[in-house]
Length: 310
Image (cartoon, rainbow, N blue to C red; front, top):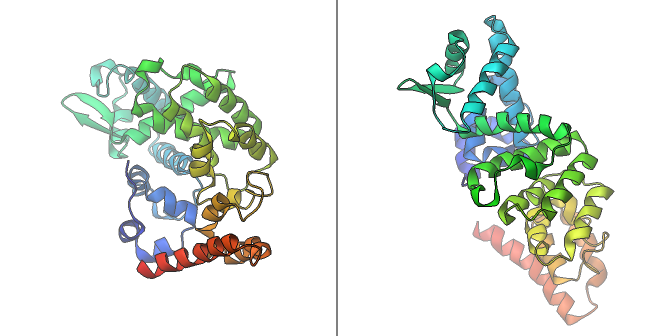
């Protein structure tokens, strides 16, 4: 799932609308599957500011339910049909119509809403991300009944890429549900020997999207920081490019000072977006040693060079 560049998204969305979007929304729409969903939203909904892909998917489903009610199709009928379809899709990606409940009105409605498509007597989701989100809603109910995340996944050898997007969505939902619930399930997940490494990385990817990490989140990261298996992942998935975490890198003890080479490396994207903070961070170390001066000069020079080359 390769991200589109900003120029391509801007062309698709429209220059004026794109200019009004917050950075989080722009990042979401760089992922083609979410841009695909976004295009089906009503105009008024398109201008909502979604902080995560889950927010976008939730709005998409709300729209479907409301459209159904306008056509006298109850939400319960839609939910029941989708749950039956999801259950059958555990065995096959395209389900024969004769295997589904005989509610033709719901079927035709979901096809008209670009949720499902029909092909040679079978039904399937127009896009996999739709099925992923609906599956996550089912997972959440299991988790609220005290199930662990690792218990929802297939065995180690059967853990393919199709579950990764669902996991990313699930962690976002759990973060919204509460830090304590998220951290409890994340700790168990990371320590499980039955989960593949690249599945576990979804925990750190979700954390990197937090706009205002609190003490519990920082403490969780600190607890895993000295584990060789996670340090580089945390650095790249949680800290890099995320101002809210970068600002705490030194004060939370991940480095002794901003003169640390890794700390300076993390400051690079902030040179243009938060230059006042960067200057305040490095000012105490200017003129202390020739090495510090070279590294700090390189920080600003590299950013200037990269900007001029762009």
